[in-house]
Length: 194
View: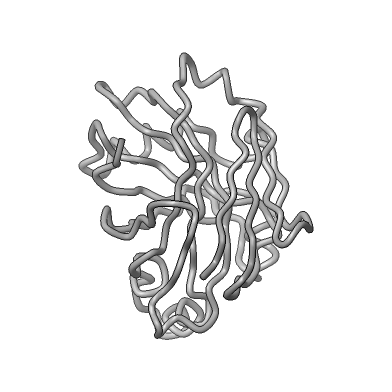
């Protein structure tokens, strides 16, 4: 199951917004990742222009007919932080820092009967065996239903799209040789940086 496109929510955990020196948003902050930026498999690599790629673990929803989430997984929203900071200072869009080749990775999809199944989900990310990110879905500023409605009211959101719902605090850089381990609910996923 490969999503058509990726809708992403920035700063949806207050501690993450604060760790990067950003204000806590009053409405969802939306950006897009290209449908072609997904890396398949457990071995990940990045383009040569990327010098400071940061991991951001997120709960990802897959939308079915009527924009009802049918599956969920854990995914990595990779950010080229140096480029993002430069673009933000210039007041320019973030695409080069968020939608480069290999800027996303997903775990296996888990069927979703109802959003209540994951409303209190706890999820974590370890980097080389050390926990770096830890969050609960119920800590999100904007909840799943509100995010879907907000997007549907403003964008051509459609069945087959995926939604990255935001990352908790603890984001940081990755380098060649790093092992990333994500866990949440029944999912245990490993990715290796090449």
